[in-house]
Structures are given as C-alpha cells and as structure tokens.
Image (tube, rainbow, N blue to C red; front, side, top):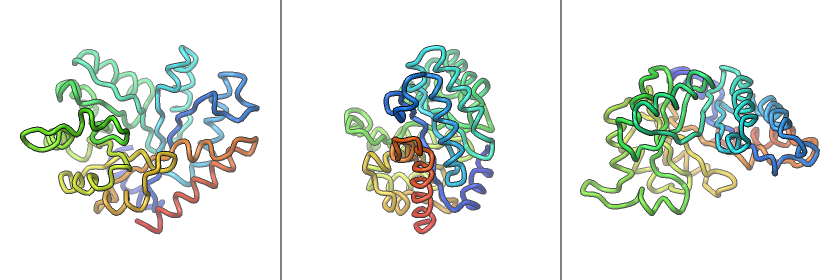
Length: 266
C-alpha cells in the first residue's frame, strides 16, 4: 500500500486506526496460553474481528523475536494473513551501517512483505538509505517518542532547537511524504502541534493512545493535516479488551468504539 492508497483508505473508512499486534503469550486468554502455536490463532481472530474498523496493523517484532525460530515463523504468518487492503507495519526500530541495513530492509520489505518499517535515525541518514531505496514502501523514523526517557536524548538542545526537531527536519528535507513517516507519541500533544508545522505533509505514526493515556481528541486536533496525515495506534486496549473465549468480540467492540470516535473528530 502506497501513500495515495493509504490516504484513500482513510478517507473511505473515515478513521485512521492502527491496531497493534503486540501479542504477549503471557497475556493471552487462559485457554490459549499453553502453546506458542496459539499466538497465530489469537492474531488471526483479532485481525478478522478488527479488520472492518481499522486501516493498518503494526506488529512489534520484539514479541515474536523473543520466542526464537517459531516466533519468526508466526511473525511471517501474521504478516501474510493481513490482507493487502490494510497497511502492514513492522515495528522493528532497525538501522545500522549500509550493508546491514540492506539486510534489515530485505527481511521486512521482501520476506515479510511489510508496507512499512520503523527505524532509529541516530546513526545518521546514510543508515536509513537502504530502507528508503524501496520507493513504494514507507520508512517510519523515530521522532519524539512517548516514553519518559525521550528527555534523555530526543529533547536535548542543539544550536537549531531540540535534537528531535533536527532529526525530523533533516530527514523530511531528504525524503518526501510519499516515503517518510515519523513516530510522535500521543503523550506529547503540545510538541505534536509544533512538529506538524515543521512537516505539514508527512504522516505521523502515533502510539500512546489507550493504555498509555494519550488523548485521541488532542492527537487529532494537533496532528492532522489535509490528508488526515495520522495513523493512531492502539495495541493493548484493543487486543486485550477481553480475557475470555469471547476475546475477539471484545476486541472488535473496542476497535469499533475507537473508530467511531475518530469519525466524529476527523
């Protein structure tokens, strides 16, 4: 799914919900917790239930990598199960020297068939080039994250402002809105408004709504642009909305509620 297709999808569905498949085996309903294999059972039911209510899925790869080779298989199975009608994001936060980044990009764009991958910019723009070499894919650069530790580095003062502002401006100057997105946490509502002024056309991937306490209304008010320009992620609040055998029904209900609120706000 490319930029124009994503904009069209959001306009058609009138929401910008991204469901995060951060599937932790220890948080699965009790009847599914006994076997690693049940993660794919859980994921498929969550996808089936939430598909009408979202435009994208974000898969945090750490929850799968920690399970070894079978976790990687489940990761690949999950990506393949998501239909091409929805944006598929690999939340992997990769980046390294050029030849290593090439392999990361190949893993997620070619093997997993993801539409987008999150990357860390702190080794420099040359480490991001292998991801941006995929012209019909999105590379999602960490901008201003929602965790408290963002103050340690991202908020450091530089000669030209905050470090995160330099990261965003330099990346956006080199890579346009057709390819680049930026992660901006929903708990950074005031800064999000300023970031939108810096990059009026790029999409923002926004975690932190739901379990982390970010405001959906503030996120949309401060972060939207003419194309909506937002993918607002909710993970735990949706996929763990229910803990019984009706978990998929509860997930669908929560996703539908968030999507309905988005429709009113957009």
